[in-house]
Structures are given as C-alpha cells and as structure tokens.
Image (cartoon, rainbow, N blue to C red; front, side, top):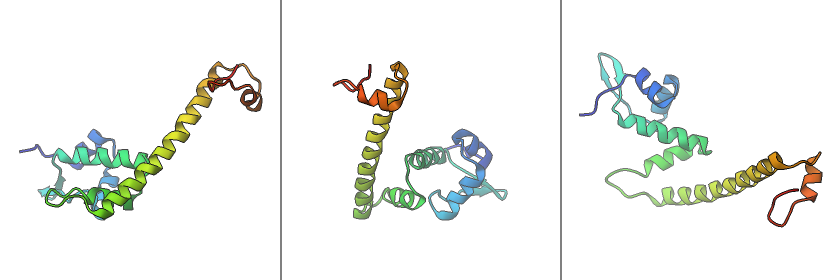
Length: 133
C-alpha cells in the first residue's frame, strides 16, 4: 500500500500551498483524502495529480477546464466527447501560444547578438534567415 502523506508533506513535495490543496478538494479536482486521527492523509498518487494540475494551470488551463480534463480519465469509462472537444480546442490554443513564444524567443535571441540602437532599426535589417545584422 502507498505510504500516506500529511497535507504539509504533500505541499512540500509538489510546491503547492496547503490552502490550494484544500481548495482543489473543495471544487472536486483533487479527491477527498482519507482522514487519520482527523487529519488529511494523501496517497502518493496525489503528488502526480497536483503536478498535473500545476502544469496545466501554468499552460493556461482554467479550473473549469481542469475539471473537464480530469473527469475524462475514469478507469471504467473512456474519455467523453466533451473531453475530446475541449482537449482538441486546448491543443490548438497551446500551439498558437507556442508559435508566439517561439517568435518572441527568436526576437530576444537575435537581440542579444544585435548591435542596432532601436528595435525598429533591427526589424528593418532582418536577414532572409530571420536574423539581424
């Protein structure tokens, strides 16, 4: 059997505040833990779940989207059509964000090598390979 963790131990292992963990429980995206002597005790599966939630939030998923995303993984039922539609939409959004991030990274990396005095000067000197100067 998995060893049980206190909320403090779980918080330390996942870098998630205990208050956030309690909130996630209250809205149903974290399962209600067992109680031992009145205190919450989590299985190590909670670590993976919280890491997933944190990663998804950093990628722009809302709490509502997280609920749909997590709901689709019941070991008795395949992901619902609603889950598939949301996942497909979110994949497109993330690909769009990735393109913007990649473009900005290119600008910043080129800027580190550039000797132009202004951004507008740099943009007018961009070479065919996307670099400046």
